[in-house]
View 1 (cartoon, rainbow, N blue to C red):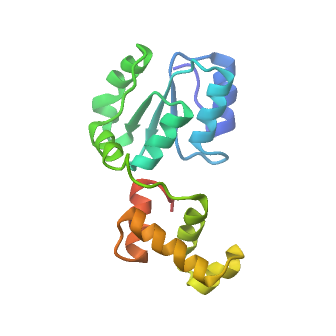
View 2: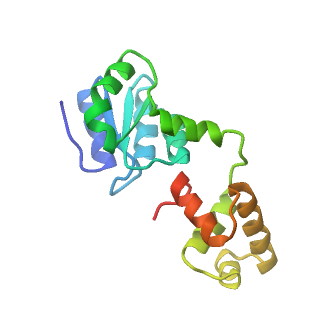
Length: 176
């Protein structure tokens, strides 16, 4: 181990200073997301090898991490069993992802993605806001809110608003 960081900016600075063979990155950091830190590190060094360590089991978070440039994704609950194998695999140039997260990603691979506006509406729903309040806050009509909610329910295969929020949190669309 060559360095440790308390936040995303410090992780980037330490990466620049030490150029580690493997960077272990948490997704939840105080000043910026781990995804943003990964993007910046990979911008600085496209060959950087990054393994995400997280408590997030959601397929959406994993997909974001890989899209940002991570080569490995490991749940903190698996550290004892999988950390060394994951580091060795990523160092050797392979990607590594736990089978249950890979299965979840595959299950939802063909699913419709939520639009940015649908995510905004869903965040407001998660805060307990009624359609009328959401409309005012997002400067759209109440009918538009209803249309977005209907679309979200369909895309997430949810029974109701609460179920949609639960699914969104589980899959990593929303953080609470």
